[in-house]
Image (spheres, rainbow, N blue to C red):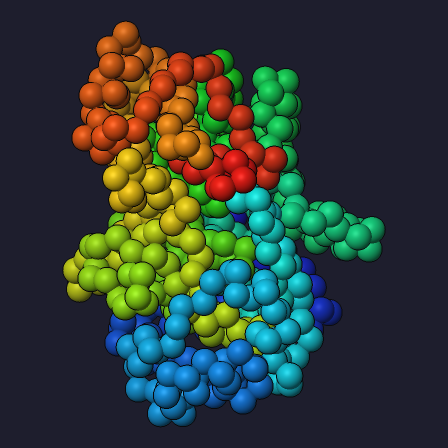
Length: 458
């Protein structure tokens, strides 16, 4: 820990939080204790919080009053999370149609409002309570701590632009906040060669101890650094978020920025912030159990077995202002298989992997769905032959596949891909183009599998 980080963590941060009347550090200390409780104790803690949330929601939130009554659920008698499965899954579209129906009439306290980035073409505005925000910040600090991050250490955030431009007042507050925390933000959506060189220049100037970034944008920066031989800094801790981290990309990040074991994957979304995070054992992602209930479910809302792919449904246990209960994030994931505790000693449940988005389901020629993760699995096996890919299914069913060649690319790659994809794609027309780069979305994220909707929008 550098001297400033020590002073910030011990004095400036506690003072700043007291001035803002935020008990973030107390929550963090609580989380640092509870993470080592047994899984059974943590589940019991979740159920107690869930029971309180459901009682409140049935009394104060019109939509849940109707939902609870319709399924015959008795919130005060909730025994375990399995009792929740009678409650219908919640979609973004339902909340968008009538946000007031999901907002508490009383008891939620002052609300904060955010918007998703709208990378799927449909931004979503939602609200959450200030208490929920404090829990979110504490959960983030705990998880980043697993990666070796200490508040106040010099950190670069290679992050996308904000979903909504801040007001002048908020921009000034952000600048002060980031200055105190020694955080520098670089827009990862700008990835021309000139912008990549600017990012490298800032890294050389700042020599950060931690780098937090959109996963694939940071990988692209890392590839540029390795191709050009530009690394001249000591190892930093790398925390990836917003997108899936592929194993072949972990090595790129370790060589460009850190060293073996210094790269950590996180999973979150705007609606809930940090959902699960990798610890120093690098064996799955620990769920933020004290703050969220994470379910991996099938289309009917029933739990799938650990080790099987399912949809991610989240309940925020502390958002009493606009409760999102059994909310489908649109993501697909696999719960960790096996009952043994992680080698790190934490009792928090784990996700084994994130496997893409539900919207990545392609339409087969026979009407059956084709999981987009088919592409992920095939390209993961190609190693250094391919750096990036993007598969786009057009409205008429045809698939356009772009491939960025890697250092081991050869003439047989394209034909090999056609052969390996045929059993999955069947009669769907497939065209493969070798390109030098695949642009990121305006948000800075990259989508590997894209399905056009009825309007032709991606």
